[in-house]
Length: 445
Image (cartoon, rainbow, N blue to C red):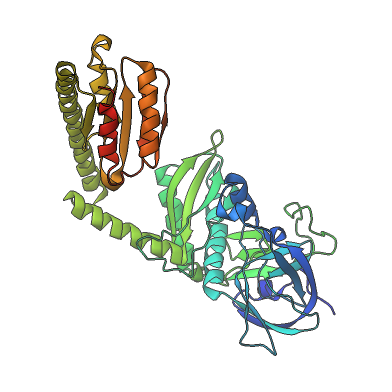
């Protein structure tokens, strides 16, 4: 049984086709780690203790079909998602979330085996496909327009992970942005000009075509792609851009939808990332931004314009800073008062619910070393909010003994120290914990 190679897959010939009946050519059992995408591998390396990295190895099957409507990861575009079901089992779909390119082969990773020769129907997650096409084709257009500005040639790009399938206008779901890496930071005037020109081309509804010229440059092809037997695809936006690419693309610029340019981020040397979004993502980001602006405007009692919000935010920040300074000054005065009471009454226990560890330190700092009691236990907080514990005194042995007793009676208390000082923290005070600490402090009196 034959198979189509990557470059000539039906998903590359017709990006708007979302279903295909085909036959299984091969099915090989493999370890699940072979299905890791570049993004998955990077996330595992970044956080070795994540659930993703700690997942136990499972068994998957590498399935090849005569053709594939499911696009394999490549060209900066993530893999398609979808389902496969055998003709004789239409009500038992197999979920597919990873498709790789192995040389010229499109390999589908399946949680279940399928016998070679089985007739299957592949079905693509159409929303995810359209989202990817809008971002990818939008990037081609964006890079072409930026090329007309000196020093703004695209050095690299990255498509933000798709969250299509969720409610992307939910207040807790922020669509991921894409970025292009540039050799320098564009000015605000350049960003505005580029965005306007991109959206003009979108509205002009220019045709986008795919060709496979024999003389196309092959320098960009990945090292494991068979240049002699493979197919080089060139994506052309009429009158704007010609670029080799293996991804799925839109047929006309109007399908890209709005292109929004966001913020910049400096990286290596003078290089800069310019973040952008297209189509449904751009609309979702704009909608969420407007909601956030209106919410902030109401919260801060300010107008909705950036200048009004900025001025009001500065005013609130300054007021907060002044309030924090006044609070710290007052706490310092209260700490001195409590320190005087400790000295006068030889107190061994201090507890306040409305302060933090800094306040306890202020109390101790206000007590001359010669006036410290044998042991002084200080604590903050109450209930589920937890708090801090500070144990000091004139007798180092008694301090460490008291700390050991505290660790024994207060569940969740963690800390350490040497000599005449010990400090710790508890995530939540359980019933009776604070009373137990007070009793321990008074045992040394």
